[in-house]
Length: 391
Image (cartoon, rainbow, N blue to C red; front, top):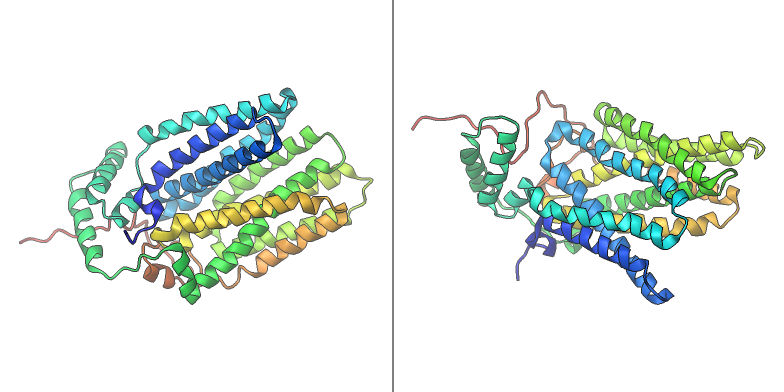
């Protein structure tokens, strides 16, 4: 029995394409389920595939890029989500039959299964899981694409691989996180924040849909206002550290929701716009916490941790409609209170800006609350520059 986690045996890319296949098949079957029980089962598998595909795709993208491009990649990763939010209103307006609507959003997912043959595996995952030769091939392809010199890649990767093989590395499984106080604290705080972001973002989106006016137009406006927030996140993630940005976006989400429920109902459009701004800050929190979660935990458990955190986010999304069943003032008050709670529990977390993705438990435990200032982009950690020495 290997000490690596189940996911580590298959890699990021294989799991991404598997999740896309599950999402596509389950989504299509939802439209033909005859009774409630099989319908719920298929919806469960559809949700499982969607959550796994999003998390794995994001981890794969982040492990492709270096430290200085991580913020930009994180924000750009969410722009298609914004566009999907906007177009969802248009598709639901044109396709009023729920089965046709379901097929329209499920069938295109089969195209992403082809990523297995079009995209390369994460070189960081390959190195941390003893696939040195495959990592060399991937990095040489990266280098050729970027028109760089490939002459020293093999020597540098082999030297790094030999170095990490001689080090004592703690490759822990997910359940072993609870044995370490610092990791347990980080996971606990992130769990609350993920739950708050999931319930807040989807809850406020539903809250906007229930407000006065056309539901399709309200949802489209809500999605459109997320785009400026996503673009602003590119610059804010580069200028600000992770902790203060996450604290600010959570706090402002709560503040704007308080304004919404305090504003007179005879100004419906003002309330809709303010609620959309609130949702924009919730989405910016989502972007930040996605990146934060990747940077806090070592490679061996990164995908498992993000899967667990995404499950809590999905659980928050399940709770959100129940909250919206209350009166608008009560529902808005709950969303505002939890957003402020999310800001508070961010304080104990270490800062991860300008740090390499942790490969081991030791790397993760050395994170502090101070921001690391880089003089220059060091590139991926697994290919450190090494001077040539004469024999």
